[in-house]
Length: 61
Image (spheres, rainbow, N blue to C red):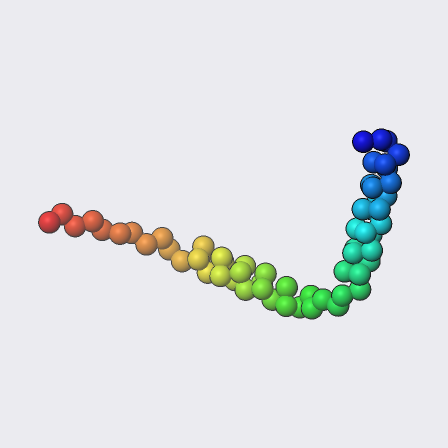
């Protein structure tokens, strides 16, 4: 492939990616939902760590 052709293809693809990024930046996001999900996972992890470890007894039959 000629270097000029490669450069042209690269510039076209870069322009497409820039356009997609600009469109994505305009999409409104609900940051509270993400924070809530992370918060719930942290609470779940904290409660698991706060509980004493359970010991399983093995029975010999």
